[in-house]
Picture 1 (cartoon, rainbow, N blue to C red):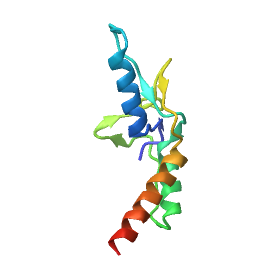
Picture 2: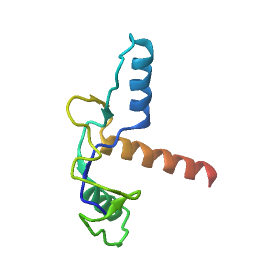
Picture 3: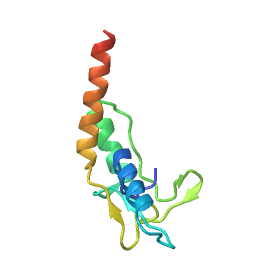
Picture 4: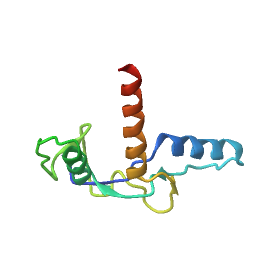
Length: 108
């Protein structure tokens, strides 16, 4: 996978950003939104697999394509000013994990 930077944003933060734009004066332009933290794509996937006790190896390949596109280091992060979400990746992950566990216990 390409060793590029990315800034994942929680769905709730996307909704907040869209709502803010929807009720504001017209921009006559665009805005960029992103999560509050940058990660290297390969490192975050490696960390997550390790947390799941998944022994698959993640290989960083600068020539790897992402959905068919060649990537530069900053292809997936905002350049310049961006509206940043508030939800940190770890907080989102912990929330997601506890919701999954809750659903599993309700089924059992």
